[in-house]
Image (cartoon, rainbow, N blue to C red; front, side, top):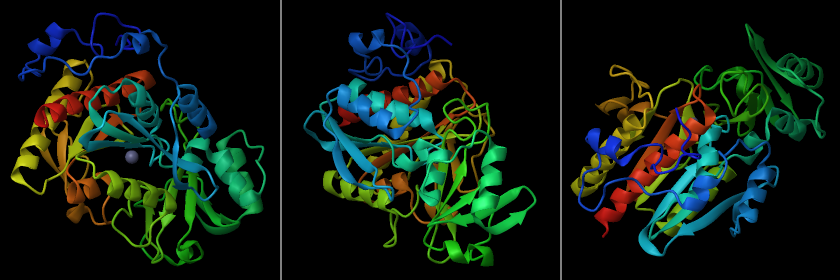
Length: 388
Ligand SMILES: [Zn+2]
């Protein structure tokens, strides 16, 4: 697939004709998604960030003012960047709650410059700076120094040597070092709530490493996925706790910003372990909001399909708490899922329209970035039409 970043005379890799042929985007005053500026079109394809400091440097070099919303446990600032215009309702874009899903983070940074709208926009490009910095860095928080680990096997050996082993069965190893838990692989939905071995980790975090070579942006050890053990021993993650009194600092930063800006449109940029695209929408508080939620989801998925992106198969279901709306689009029912509200669930409950974008991590990195941009740009055009 040609790169949108190098292509001329096209919009997000699509020709105007191909968009129209696809049957999408024929609404009044809207033919195509927001145009990329000529300047950004000439720039090279965005690349993954090695460290959180690189992301912050990039934002500063581009002239953005970073607002510190709060701090992660390692004192990394959680930053928000304001862009767009002054019109309300505001738009909120969040990414990086799951640090392995790195194309969303890069897309959020790109959107700060590329999204053209009269509406006020706030972007939190990553909700997990520690995880973005990678597993070695996460280990350093428990060890007090940056360890010399080159491979997953090195990391496991270090966990056994320096940690208090809490669980070691089958292929799963979990230890406590300093204030943090460290696992060698994911435990989310793999551990019974209140399991005895989680007792020392209640209220703490567990970090585990990205592990595979086939997910560009999240190679082995390149990212650390942050799990949160609740005070009652449930293993969750940073895209929960939006509606709970006990809540990790990173989550509270997003929640406070949302309370301030009251976003009428919210995006959370995620990725999943497959190679196809899907997104989720939320039932809305009013009929009018729900009409727009459906319409925006439909137009966005058509734009993604027309760009040549592989959508999730017709019969695909991301889980039992999803209900298919159309191919590649699902209603997410947080009540059926349990675990409380994620960021977009919370946005829909409190503020208005919201979408979770899920690109396939086994696809080329820049294609995944482009898909995020395309959905947000398409949706924002429709949002502008609604509020014209
Ligand atoms: Zn995710």
